[in-house]
Amino acid sequence: MEFMNYYMPTKILLGEDVVLKNSNLFNNYGEKALIVTGKTSSIINGSLKDVTSALRKEGILYDIFNSVEENPSLETIENIAELGRAQKSNFIIGIGGGSPLDASKAAGVLINNPKSTRYNLFDSPHLKSIPIIALPTTAGTGSETTPYSIVTDNELQTKHGICQRIFPKYALLDVKYLMFLPEQITINTSIDALSHLIEGYMSSNANVLSDALAEKGLKLFGECLNMIKEKDFTYIVREKLMLASSIAGMVIAQAGTSLPHGMGYALTYFHNIPHGKANGLLLKSYLEFCMDENKVRKILYLLTLENLDDLGNFLNAMLGHVNTISYEEMCLYADKMTLNNDKLKNHPAPVKREDILKIYNDSLKI
Ligand code: NAP
Ligand code: FE
Image 1 (cartoon, rainbow, N blue to C red):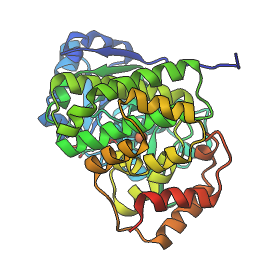
Image 2 (spheres, protein in one colour; image 1 turned 180 degrees about the vertical axis):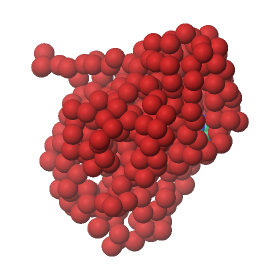
Image 3 (cartoon, rainbow, N blue to C red; image 1 turned 45 degrees about the vertical axis):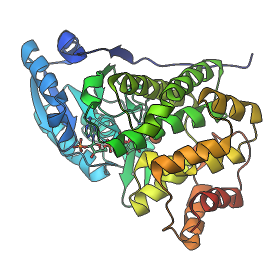
Image 4 (cartoon, rainbow, N blue to C red; image 1 turned 120 degrees about the vertical axis):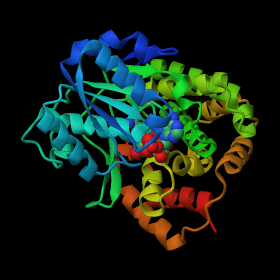
C-alpha cells in the first residue's frame, strides 16, 4: 500500500440539544467567548439562544459578532478580530453556515497573533488560532470538520483559502437548527457536500480511509436523492444530509477539492452564484473529464443513478441552467484557473487551459 496520512482531530457530537446537554465542554477553553454568526438565521433557528444559555449556565462571559455575510470578506474578518482582541476573547463559537464558520477560523488566527494583519493569513502558515467550536446550521460546507477557511479577497478579486490549517476543537451537530432552512439553500448546500464527496473521491490525494468515508457519504446522499428531488426535507433526510456533509468535510480535509471548487469561485465572485450551486453546475462536465471510469461508475452506483446524464438531469432540475455568462468571461475565468495550483495539483492528471474552458463551456453555454 502507498504511504498514507490521515488526521482529523475534531471531536464530533451529534444529537438533539447537543449544546445544552454538553455545556460543560465550553469550560475547557477559557473565561471569555466570542460568538461569530450570520445576520438573522441563528436567532430564528434557536442556535444562538442555546449557545448563550449554555455559556450563562457555565458562567462564561461572551460577546457576539452577528453580521458575517455570505462568502465572508477579509474586511469582515478584520472587524471580528478587532472585537476579539479588544474583548480579550479566549475562544470562538462559530454558528451558521460555512461563512460564519470560516470567518471564525480566520479571525481566530488574527486574535491569537495580535500583531498579524490580513496578509499574514496568506504568508504565515505556522500561525495558530485561538480554539474554535463549530455549530453548523447548513449541510453543507463541512467546515466543522475541515481545517480550511475560504475568504473573499476584494484586492485580488477572488475567493481563496487562508494558509493556516485550523480544525475546530468540537463540531456540535443538531439537526433541529436546520428544520427551517429554505428549500433552495438546502439544495445548494447539499450539492456543495456532494461536490466535496465527489472531488475528494477523485482527488490525487485520496486514500483508503478518505475513500471509505466518501463512499459512505455518497451512499447517504443516494438515500436522500428522491426526497431532494421532491423537496421533501424531513428530519430524517436532513439528519442524513448533515452527516453526509460532515463526512464530506472529513474527506476533503485529507484529499482537498479540485476543479469544480476552483472554477466555481469565479462564478460566485463575479456572478453572485451561491457556492454549492456554482460547484453543482460544473459537476457533470467535470466527471466527464475525469479518467478514472471505475470511480465514476462507483459514484453513480452509490447515488442510485444509471449514468452521467441522470446526474446532469438531477443537477439541472435542482439548480436550473445558468446561461448569462459569455464565452469571453469563461476565457477569463479559465486563465485565472490555470494559475490556481492549489486546486490543479489535486487533479490526478495534467489539466490544460482548453480542458478548463471546455468544462465551463459545456456547463454554461448560452
Ligand atoms: P452561508 O454563506 O454560510 O449562508 C447562506 C445563507 O443561509 C445565509 O443567508 C444564512 O443566513 C442562511 N442560513 C444559514 N443557516 C440557516 C438556517 N439554519 N436556517 C435558515 N437560513 C440559514 O452558506 P454555506 O453554503 O453554508 O457557506 C458557504 C461558504 O462556505 C462559502 O464562503 C464557501 O466558500 C465556504 N466553504 C467552506 C468550506 C471549508 O472547508 N471551510 C468548504 C466549502 C465551502 P444568516 O446570514 O442570517 O445566517
Ligand atoms: Fe464547498
